[in-house]
Image: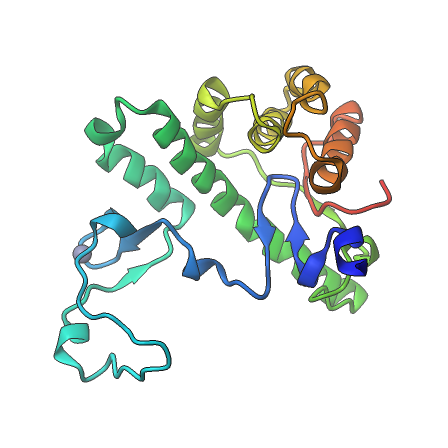
Length: 230
Ligand SMILES: [Zn+2]
């Protein structure tokens, strides 16, 4: 099984911040939250009103069908909209710091998305490399600097305060947050224990783990694709 060994099954691309992009499964199919551009509200899929249920393969005309016409104009939240959501849901989230932290993490990855796109564009425009489906080892540029932004720094400090370190994915997310905050020692402190966790699976976690350790040791806060040769 070559795809499994490469860790890039079906062209999936893993990033240092934990974003996993799978071309076979667009993100909009599994988004837990949306943003309504008409009333500027942050919404959870589970709170939404069902206007229609689709049969598989059924064709729906969203332009003329009156039930769809009155459905709001919703979209994937941008990072500011996730943070607006945290504010709008303040009372609702207050008893659940883990819930708030999970939304803040989505905001952080969404903030990084802009630079992911930029890195992909640079590979294409400067090196004529089409990154789609190409193993990340072969990308000419694998890392990009993500600028410090006041609101995002505050957001990341809140994540660092609350995020649970007991499972490998979350612990690496937390270490990566510290790395972006240029708190490399704190990041390494967390990483030191990650490979000893019960759930640590080398096939799933080792590449990202090694890359994060390496970037922390060289005090590099940039966002990057996870790849074999470091
Ligand atoms: Zn609305």
